[in-house]
Image (cartoon, rainbow, N blue to C red; front, side, top):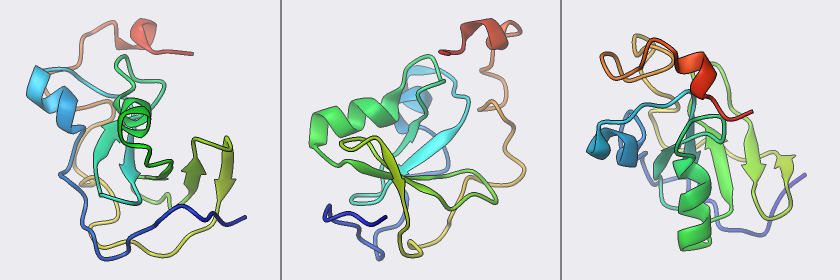
Length: 116
């Protein structure tokens, strides 16, 4: 399935982790990358759900997983997966970045803090 929403293949990701979590000293479970502007935010299982917040704030509905080995896309408006082109590198967080992350910010009881 494809989408009419803009996907910009020349826009690099905003960083290697969730921009808002890093700024606030928070943590994330998995990462999602906006296919329109490159913003990297945390997934809906993460405590702060910044990728979804980015969509609601900007109207950019398409994200791609920013996890190593994953290249799937998701459309928040239609709540459906879709196929898409290869985005500007890097295609994921660094392989040596822990999950959850970032290192040093994840509480010991992190599994109880996930959104289900």
